[in-house]
Amino acid sequence: MNTVLVVFVVLLVLKLGTSIVLDMLNLRHAQARTSEVPESFRDFIDLPTYQKSIAYTTAKTRFGIVSDLYDAGVLAVVLLWGILACFYQLFSSWFGYGIWGQALVLFLVGLVLSLPSMPFDYWSTFKLEERFGFNKSTRKLWLVDKMKGTLLGFAIGYPLLALLIFLVTWAGPLWWVWGFSVFFLFQLVMVVAYPMFIMPLFNKLEPMQDGDLKTRLFALADRTGFQAQTILVLDGSKRSGHSNAFFSGFGRFRRIVLYDTLIEQMEPEELEAVLAHEIGHYKLGHIPKMMIMAAITSFGMFAVLGWLTNADWFVQAFYFDTPPEGQIVIVPVLLLFMLLSGLVTFWLSPLSSRLSRKHEYEADAFARDAMGSDQPLSKALRKLHKENLSNLTPHPVYSSFHYSHPTLVERETAMRAD
Ligand SMILES: [Zn+2]
Image (cartoon, rainbow, N blue to C red; front, side, top):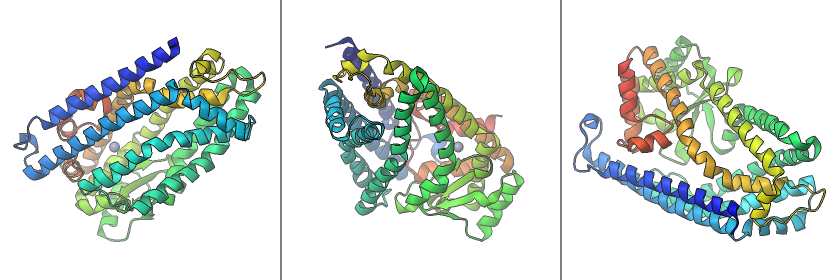
């Protein structure tokens, strides 16, 4: 076995091991006390619901561990047995080594590699979520979603991949700088295009209906300096009982999306607080800040890609043939990068989670000030945790590694503190 494969196996085992240890820690922590509700949660959650939230955390964690083991196994088999190289060579012999042919090969290999995880996706929706009463999707809708997603991925991905391959042949050794620029522009466009054009392909997104609630929310938006026409309601209940709200876009293209499930669960005052939190994300410039972070990350990734394109040993280690003179080598590199980058970026997730949590604290403080009290948002968050059966007692190490939002206790404490 060559050195590159040994490094791959070590990284894979380290990631899998760390992930499972964190899961087990978190699970034990959640299961530590099931006979009574901890003191700080007693006034909003009853014992049966609390126990149900622990059962949900347990089921999700176990499912996560099994699917992580399975994914790692599939990845190891695909790479160590040279299956990836086989697929690449087979598809290339069909579609050729030109720009459009190679883009198609890349898309198709990616599609084939996504198939092994399909049963887990199905199980998660129709067994796990179903058992806890969250699933509202049907088998037909699930299948239609998959097909729509694939077609959309093809419509957007195919020309983009072809452009990337073209850049390699056209721009020479510094192609990756161009690749990064194209990719970054694409990300900018997607921040705006996603809620405007892509979400409506899967969900109904409508302006709020007239009424008392709309008047109250629009008044709050005016007060905090957010143009209110862009508050939309999404029919999340079509697929899941989980509730949510989010902010997207920037400038004239800003959008706040509230799930219909959220509107159903909350009192008007609580919804105002959630809206104020989302407006906080907008007013405090969180999207541009995240975009800058994403740009720095993808610049680094493209630099690595640029370096790997010139490293024959890398693709050869995974059983790819040496490409004949004058042929494009980028697709094997892109395929391997797609499969392997997670082994490295996994270790960066505490950093990005931390930045995201910082933004959540800031948006919470904004909402508290806009509402004149920490109570409305606090009540809304408690309800969100209860309705979504969120884990109320995650292990601190687990939450600091994985959580994009601070825990309920952390958020309430922070809102009271400053
Ligand atoms: Zn937030």
